[in-house]
Image 1 (cartoon, rainbow, N blue to C red):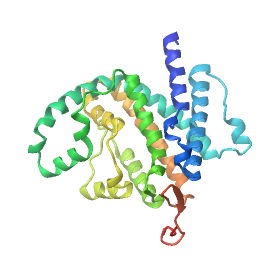
Image 2 (spheres, rainbow, N blue to C red):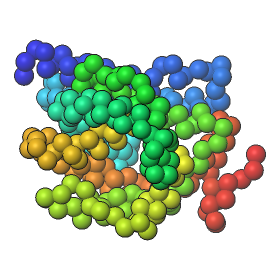
Image 3 (tube, helix red, strand yellow):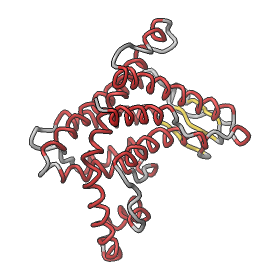
Image 4 (cartoon, one colour):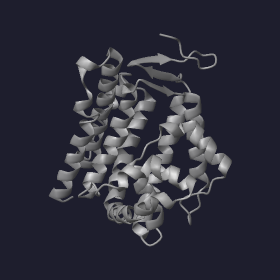
Length: 285
């Protein structure tokens, strides 16, 4: 391993350990539940960072084995942490190859945005929801590392930020159904095609299970879309994309297993409230 590569891996470890971002922790403006949520998320990221260092920098040891033995973390969390380490690495390597294609796609979509007012209504609605504010701005990344930083911040800060909204419900049963549907999609994929066409009903079910109204633009999501086209002429990118999707599939499967024992919950004005066993009704304040 070159010195530069080792420095980048160490820099990524520091990035992982710094999330969710410090600016999101504002004790004077947050409830006890929100403060606890931030610290729990940060502690998990610290464990992931330790495992990243052990696997890719030091290349020995298992820094969370003792925590597992002492039952400080569950077996499922232990497995999810190590799976996340591998997924982050695949995401980093994918981004190195994909970022130049993403930059070109951004330039093309900036040009297309000039004609957005002539789009058919369904495409126009999709454009306005996800892309309009993004593609009227300059391309935001100077390197693949910048893209990777953004993708991790989107994931970790985004998940934490649920608790900062006035109301955000996490319907575990619907979420689990959506996860199972994604797993089926991955399992149906053939070597010659990375994306399996879904029926309109399947698309609507997926949108319902994951909450279409809650979805926002994601640079990682945009990267994966761009990759679907770029892999047609880039075999190495295709290999990295398949590797990433396999790890994503494993993550979905483990998440589905973990979710079986979790109740639905919601964030209401900074407090977490759990759904009742019957009907998933949230109690009133």
